[in-house]
Image (cartoon, rainbow, N blue to C red; front, side, top):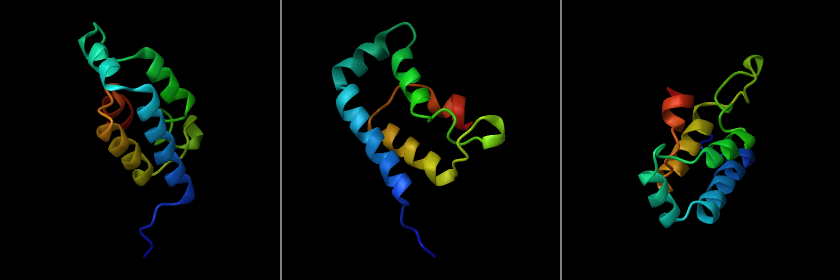
Length: 93
């Protein structure tokens, strides 16, 4: 059995890591956490533009046909970056 990530999965993780490093600095995160919504609608739109909101859903429903490993990579990277947007509650659960 091969437990290595695919090239696409590595690219997904690298893209998210770059986004968090560049566009999600700690002070901005702190301000978002204190805001009325508690997250950034602009970041949420960027996640949609990247296809993350459609990732785990079948293509028949407009999704990206991702699998559990793809979703785990997103969740792991978001956890590492302390992402505030409600990905787990709205996309995964």
